[in-house]
Image (cartoon, rainbow, N blue to C red):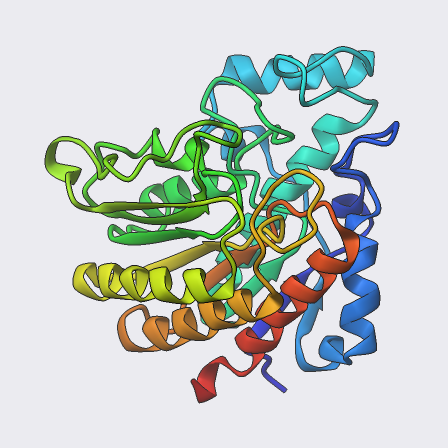
Length: 318
């Protein structure tokens, strides 16, 4: 039986999480899986194990110096990989490599036609830049996927859609001048929240001007405001007709997240996922890779990510 959706979970991915009560703890995957099993979503997808990325795969986006520094700090098992948000721990290099490797394994399944959509809850590490970690993100799997689509598969026009509460600066700025990376990023206004970027006037530079859509949301915005702005997102994507869609669907935009101030319900994530399935069917041969991203209230992330996965499963009906 062919499953149209592949789900990437497992022990190696579960190890991407920081100890000592850190908000991005190692229990996040289990919180999602418990709810997915309760809803019997696992029976409707192909559950796939993670794999480690080779260094040369990670270096499609990241500098060799950054990769080597992560490996060294992983062996030491102490210190910070960035400036204070992202601590090193023993095995962080291997866990981070599993995040990237699983993303690439999912991408390979999509590009080979073995499935149409993938979902990886422990992924979407959208703050890491080419030369540094940032904001709980060691390696940027989303940006590695974009560069891999280019360098390995020859896909040019790629949509990156990000509904995490935090602006995806580690994807936006490295591709800010690239006219073929179509960005939609809906996030809490950077005047109130890390990383302080993603202003509405930032629409791409050079040949890419007008190809990027940043939509900052006021603190307290809920589903009503999201649905209104989502129509702008759909119009933007429809106008630029991507050949492939990458979704980062952080659940930290839901009401009650301890690190942010938006008030969505899982209906926002369901709406976004359903719309993207329809757009992908029309423009991108159905092809989407999805990543969980942020989310620090365990009940919220379980509900939001299951809503996305459910719409991915229904995707051919959208």
